[in-house]
Image (cartoon, rainbow, N blue to C red; front, top):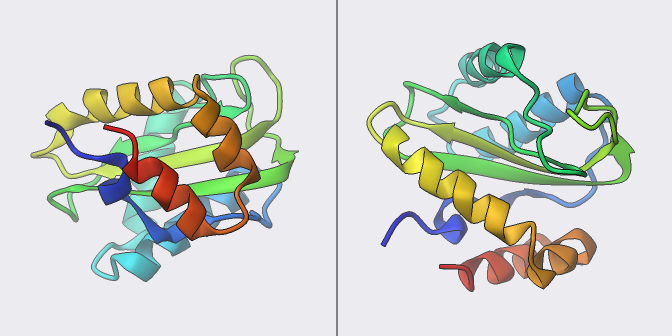
Length: 151
């Protein structure tokens, strides 16, 4: 048994209507959501780690979905935030299409072996009907309930 998506993404770190239209704005918005749940996280350090990873290759890797992720030494677990954008984000994705759902992940250096498992769970999720429900959910709690059904 690995880490459950419902343990990584707290209902309070799910942003239904992202206000940002750029990658920079969305990263800051989702980092805010993580620090609201995990105040011990340093926002500037998280963002620096995410940008360092993003420079290697865009994390907009599934049509309409981005999964920015990085190793962050300030935690010893995996934390995340989900953002939904109805209008789409100019993300510089590999397919050049706008991104509508962002799964942001930060992993402590001692749990990074779990990160492939977590990424696989997200890849599997975005190929199911549950993903359509996530995109149209009315509340963060609805999304969290959907995530808790994925093992």
